[in-house]
Image 1 (tube, rainbow, N blue to C red):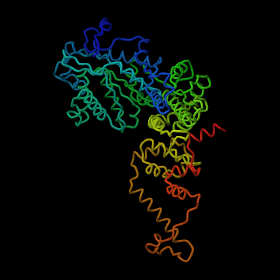
Image 2: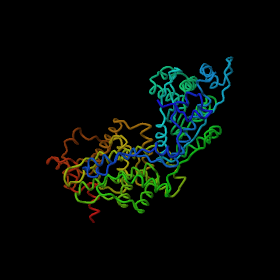
Image 3: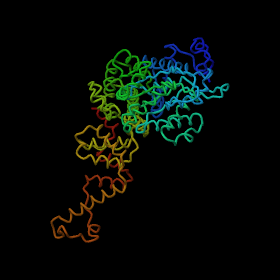
Image 4: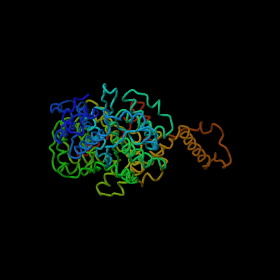
Length: 575
């Protein structure tokens, strides 16, 4: 609980309002910059730690947040929205209890009532924040909201105030799903049972109860993230959700903020009233950072957090390369910097005595090998291709992929000595096989089992060689969402292949050749002599390796069939 806000109380519109009195003090732009900043724990002496510990230190950058002008502007707008929305909802004012008794239901249902409801003038505003995926919208929102206590208890009013609540836009459902998510969130915060009471009724009734609960707990701000999901909602559901949110703002007086990708603009403009109301305090759109003073400030602030043994000075070439490979996408910049450090630390661990400097070529290599999935999106940003960007606007795998890359890098084990770090086997493949394997690896990073992933990729056929890997991965993800091939189907596929092989063998020339209508005698295939494997056959290499207690990976490495990526990098650098 915060102290009584004397500064705010001096403003006449904020006087005598318990909802406003216990909010944090109003901050200047400089004060907001200090409050929002999330530095990471760092000590230059940590550069002398063993490599295995320094890799974990690098992971601290996930919590790094450097506020700039647009984040501070967002903070000021949200602060104004919360306070202005409470002006028209003063629990100490006459008539507030009457509104709780029946005014909310009458307003939402738009029905006439015999009850005398005091005149209510809503002071709530709405606001929209849009920007490309990875621009830092959600993270900035979270940093701002952390400034406010989410729950404030008012013993004198026998009331619990919810200053803010954040929900994600329903992907397929309409207002009903939004209400269910709302009741669940409130129950988790307050320990109430609203979902049990109201979560199983009809949609119209649930909408009324949501408005009543929001009014009862004096919600200061309702944040709806990923609003672009409404594009994919069932017919008419998106419009219904927006219309309901308009009612919350206009008739109940609850401020609403909508957050989404650029395609969310189409959703908002599709409803004129919502487009008008979402500009109540000015809509903000965040593009990736251009290569200007803001970029230089952000990169310089982050660059000091290096855990490599050798400190790499920030040069103009490094700045140019990092911006080119990330195109100023905040999330991508931070994670690319992290992975470059991790890779350099790993190389230094396997090659004692080598320097651990971050070079432009290292950043290029990290971008090429670890961020290949988002390469088409980066290329579209580089070319300013609006049509292509729209194609990748709602790519849900973006953050999951970056998370998978970091998890893979952080979980790599280390062997003491000069042996290369064991990594997942990477066969020397070309063409369509390379693309297919990349898609399989990406699906595995998202939690899809390898056998299922391979079946899905095989179903793409010849398209693997020609199509964009990002498009193919999206198609595979859609197939999985519709229905993952069952084990029975996979077995059927394997059995069909064996039957086809048996039929082909039966049709071959020789003394045992049979006609197409003849059956192969039972047990003949099982009793046939096994084919002798050649020394270059992978099965032969793996089998021979097991006789010497070698894993399949170790046997293939020994035979030079596959090469560890780290060892390959060292060899290329040596050349």
